[in-house]
Length: 317
Length: 286
Image (cartoon, rainbow over all chains, first blue to last red; front, side):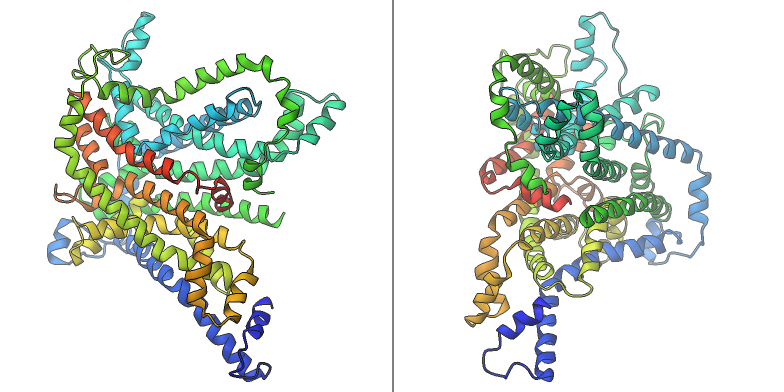
């Protein structure tokens, strides 16, 4: 409606505004202008998201290997790539690792993030300054963070084992022991996510009206009670966004794992994302790599839809 | 109630300030938390300044700092830093060229179908980069874009453009339509109104988007890993990764490289600080 009115205001005398025909024509040219602004982006998104997703689907049904690059020939093999993936001995390991990695990361990132957000909300001297310094790790490219942590977690002379050595604790094989490696990788990923969680949850907490707490304190709701009855319900939507975004981003993580362990030792830190990379770019089994990628998309998309559902509800509120 | 509002409003400051004198213990606790969280950053800088980092002798404080690690790092990785700079700058330019008009189109015209495109943009944020890399590898192989600056710029732009559009659009939606309409009445066409009115007003949002695009492209690892294989075009992230692949004996140069790779982000953040509205970010997340 507003658009039509704006259009009418633009009648510059060349045509009398008002006749249905001219209005329709101007409306049409206006729509065209609008689409022209967006067109390059649409083309780009189609080319670099639409095409890869379709290509990934067809690749997963083909025997796509290095020879394909020379012959251009990739025979159709139906669902045998998927069959090969599912029956692969490390499939279960990979799925379990992905679940542990994602759940472990999210739970602790969120818990620490919320704890720190509540802590910084108390507005003590220098709290704003300290809170902004918390974002310092963001300046490091992920792979640089991975490098630093690989050094800190080094079994022989890493800082963590040096520190533990002070208390007489024997060196822990953080990244080379299959049982410990996954825990270490999750730990590093938790460290990475804490600043994001703290920042978003802190802004969520700031949006809770102070009067609510004042009113509640008159009724005797302080401390845990106040948190449970006022804070939590008020930030619930922010919590939803943080958690779902966290899950979706964690599912995609490759930098940290490849940098720290390369998926090893003995596939103990292999996740769906790193496995897809291994299949395509280490073993050059592009068909199987595409199949793993598609599994990953399905899982991500489930969470993506949950996220969109939540944000939409929030907009409606 | 937007995040902007929340970040900008110092809620209940006065109410609290009179208590603040008793709250120094909290500051101490805060310092402890912060120390734990940024220890890796400290350790990176500390190790980069020690020549024999890697032997069991890395001390907790660089008492005898040396720049030998940096000398090695620049010798071995200087070229890769330059590559990253070229790719990231190219990505920022291309991404803004695509995202800014699109953001305006989506914010102002609100045509049928555009809602769908915004929905698609949100979905793209969920697509793992490995999916894109998998398909782009074969495409780039066919058209000769592997191991090229342009190939990396295109892939990085693809990854960054949706967020840039979402971010800029969130701001442009708040520009009063009357501003643009006034210009249109004065005889300007839509393109002129966009270039001379909308873009200058949106400077903060555009700079914020540029910064995030740069950081994203600079930190990109997966496209570098999959779409390049020769030393000719090798971003710094891959340079670091190649260090990690071998059994590292000398951590000094590796940490020096990590520090060098973190400098552009820090410099940009300081330079762009006054433009960055946390609010723009908050608006885009929602």
